[in-house]
Image: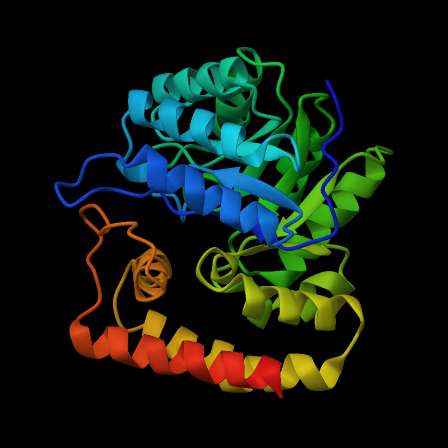
Length: 305
């Protein structure tokens, strides 16, 4: 099993494009991924949360992952989503491996909330069916204690943990648990919504990597923030956080699911025909799209200054 090594750049979570009838649009998905990779991300996370993993059949998932790998053309690693019902998670793991993915992001199991031993069994069941390195998503039905995290991080197939809970004290314990294993190949990720808002705190506890849904619709803005973050340019970070990310989050928080819906809307505003989101998500209203357009324009004025 190979170590996951990312390039120096934002982690790219592409959307999954649909046509006007709601069917999978592989051509647009492929061109969207290719354009994003050209913008210089550290890696591609295909068919994950921003890619509407929850709304894809296994056949659609397989096609999206294969298209993303083709579009990436080996320039950066491609990590595929997996999760939900155990049988579906295993099917996704097998399909991603056969397609040539470099790793898996294991999302929480479907609906039920098991004990910590059950979460371990869920992860182990997926590990038994794939040789791909697995990043475990600490979120929802897979919320981990430090002890569980330490056990999982001792398993050779587990490559790291992505935090989607937002409890910085628990996240610190997870990093420390990883250090106690003695492994130097582990990766830890800030996976909160609009992670740029919290990344300074996560970097301080040893989680330097973060998801950026914004990169999918505005790679220029997301990359400008990332460069300021890497250079410890506090002034640029502050201006972007206050002038772009803060109003974006305010709009996002108006409607459940807008963390994905707004990204697709931003792409449509840029002329990329990615289509609507699938149920149960909903698209923004015309007024909300206009506000998004204004927020994007404000962000671009900030990075042009």
